[in-house]
Length: 176
Length: 185
Image (cartoon, rainbow over all chains, first blue to last red; front, top):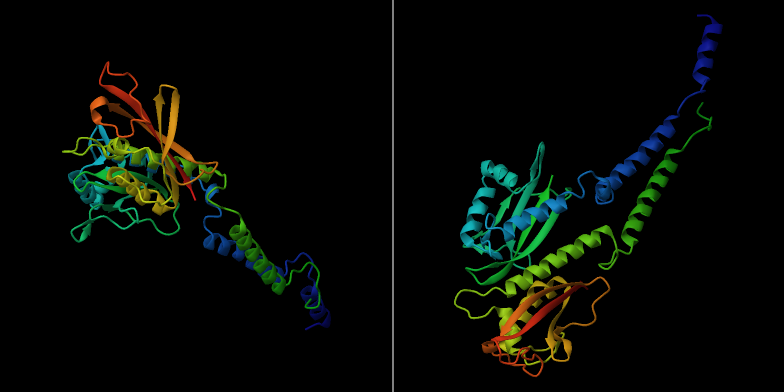
């Protein structure tokens, strides 16, 4: 092999014009990974900038209003809002825990808008957040379960269970 | 090439800057003064939630269960002896105590302070008395109210405070505006 060819190859190896150094790539990768790490550990940081961050709140509010105040929801009668009926609660609980009726039920509560299908969870609790019992099961704890990283809209309504003469809280959670 | 240091960011520097970035953001997020009284868009939402809960509570307290003559709230107004109960002092009589215990369970135990006031017309103008008092509300407190109508034969105890507004012409006695002021502590 000719010495001049070898020299030109060496010169090509030594030529580092127009290169991004590997060190730089590594550095910027770590920098970006730091951002991803931050986003994951503080997921509420970017919450105000997510496209669905605001709509779940009014959706939860609307669903809660239907449940607490309308006789189509849980209210015992149209003239007594917030006074809820145990039979209706038991019915709603079994409806929300049945996957087929669940999707139908959330459409009736205004949580299906075209392709956007919001999930919901309804529960009846004491004011210390423990579930109100019905023998060994909770009386009302139905629907899907939100995961830890979802933006959830939550509304609390104070309701009165006439069968037990007790004020309780109705928790409605909505998320996409 | 190995010794060429042009346009390089060292890996160790990358790690160091990344660490600094992470620490600074965590520090800022943790240190930001987000108290319950901080004004923000989220706060307006919380105030609306507080208003809903307060209104719900007054509706429930004013519900007359089957077999009862009056709602617990109305009974508390009738039995009230014109005394203001401060903080956690013992509340009497029983019907006022019931209202106080419901308010404590629903609001007090959740870190929400409350004042319950009664406002009504008298012969010398509108009078407002505190029934349950937990101190001066913060600037972003929420007030909800509900009107209770009293009749002659309801038997108001605090007649020196709540007067009969139409002598004995009709059975009408007075209208009490129950005001519940709520704020986060």
